[in-house]
Amino acid sequence: MSRRCELTGKGPITGNNVSHANNKTRRRFLPNLQDVSLQSEALGRSFKLRVSANALRSVDHRGGLDAYLARAKDVELSANALKIKRDIAKAQSPA
Image (cartoon, rainbow, N blue to C red; front, top):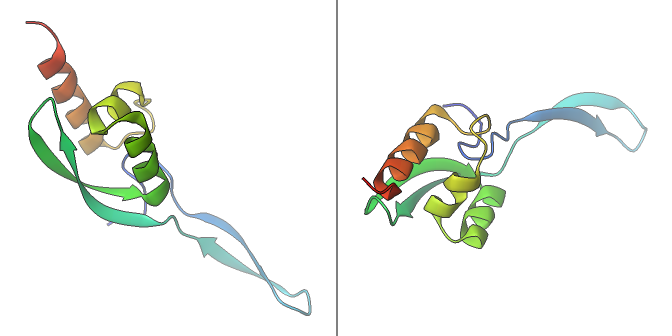
């Protein structure tokens, strides 16, 4: 399972551990990923996603999964999130 947020695309970054003696060794900073179920109002079902805690706050701030995906850039979204975004857009369009 990749360490990448499905909604924001956040992944691991690298940096240094710096000791008291100022020795530097490489390390990885991992995103705070959580396995969550997010509810879609348009589709009437929930989706299991692996998202960062920051993205979870953004989803809540924008008013739910549907509103978040409507404004999200396609480049940042995972393949699974892109499929959900297309399904929501199809359900909301007047047919």
